[in-house]
Image (tube, rainbow, N blue to C red; front, top):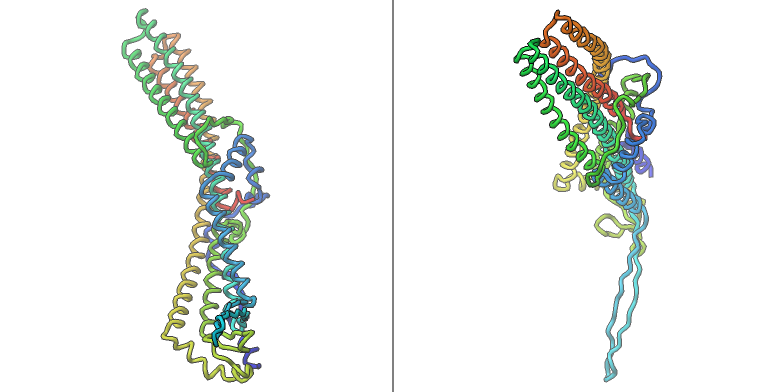
Length: 444
């Protein structure tokens, strides 16, 4: 009995604990603002009601997410099977006997023989299998969360891409109207001897360039609408949407300390769950070195191969002498142990790499958001300056101090700046969405 108590305290009964991973703090930039960004639910973060409807539709019909949910059903069934392994196994066999003689007719007699057996988990094989199944189920839920988080971010990015393209199309159509007016004005000035043919040709060339941009933007909008419908798992339909200027997001947020920074990321939790699965697999492989003990309803105690044990206490005392048999079971248990240990080491490396990747993604998203925001503010100032430049060159040309080519150049620069404004505004939104996703947002 002392031996059994000692064995139950061995490492194959230990629970998994998160490993310490050092030297990762250098990856993260400090931030001292107030609210944790990942604490926002996606409904609080994405306040556009039309976008919320598209996200809801994606969460219901997206193929990848539905597949992840079916994997959870499989993991739940596997866990249930692992739990039932602790219960006795009850079987029944039907036996028939033929008898007869002395001219009498043959008679059949039947008997139903029930049998029961119960494996004692003395060395943790069943317990570690159950723990591994529990972690596998948790891992399936984390996969679903990771798919959901990625899906929400991708739908939002596609939606905001449409808003950017709408803004650029509107800008290009307005500029196209301006160039048409310029061509009419320059043609009239040419007839009056106040403009040259070069100015007219330059204006026409600019108009053709913008016409090409309009066609390209219209094609990109159609492609983006189809892409968004595909993400939602439905056939293409008319995507109703707001405007880029209407979008608002949290302005203050906190990144926290390095480990806390990525603690809500499903992929980090998934990597940790995978490591836990490999940990319990090692414990299960270690338990395989010890014999199984089964309590049978018909034979009393029996070992793994069905041999009856008349004295269980004597069997346990002889356990040390017989332990070499599973150890040298043609090297299978030893090989299994080596494989389990190697898989555990690989899972630890994957966990560390996941933390490294998470840190890089957070920093990149933060830098993208900061840089795009600064660029957007510069764009606004540039547009104000260029609009003033267009007005001034038009005024100077009216009094003969500037050529119309200077007016055309100023208008072209203004058009490019307005396109850059919508692009940088979109990049700012994309940066904060990527930061939200990189910090594990979109799960709630």
